[in-house]
Image (tube, rainbow, N blue to C red; front, side, top):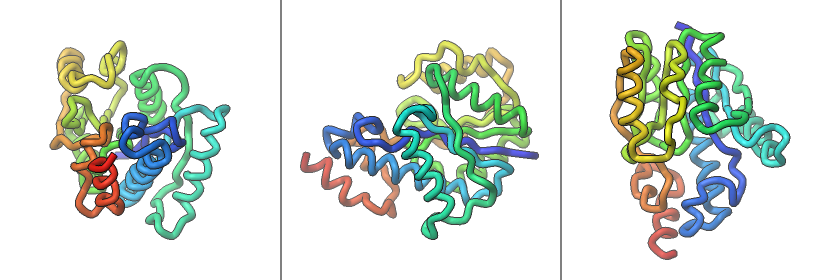
Length: 227
């Protein structure tokens, strides 16, 4: 089954990403963390043989920060430290609208070309290659798949057909997103599967849940212990 993965991310520009981390890490440190998370997401995605792999970023192509995303995409496909991407990594923009509108639009675009599409964020380092492969396999037998987050949201959604009800009018960035999504999926007649919940890196205290082998884990934990 032709399957695509879309990685949703913000361009890692100081002062514009990981803003809730700034009190502990500073603007530059927070941007560096965002870039590390994005690199990790691409590294893990590159280990799975997708039919298409897309990095979908905000802001749009007219914003100066978009140049950062363009350069980063080039680096991700050309730098020896990044595993060879098994298919071309394309760069796209999220466009206007709230998070739900942007996610739905990206999924519809992907589903116009592939039988299944997964969309992941970059805030959850627990989304490793094994989890991504498991999520793709779930779509062999289910209409949708989710990887819930411990904060009440979700870090990944996968679909075999558009389900606008999952995204329209949703109140995002709250502890009820996944619970509301379950209700909506049930009402829409969607057969879905949930993998084990993982942690998002949103607040300084979340850094305690970074994987033990995370390159700068000890430095980050020192930073939040000594603000």
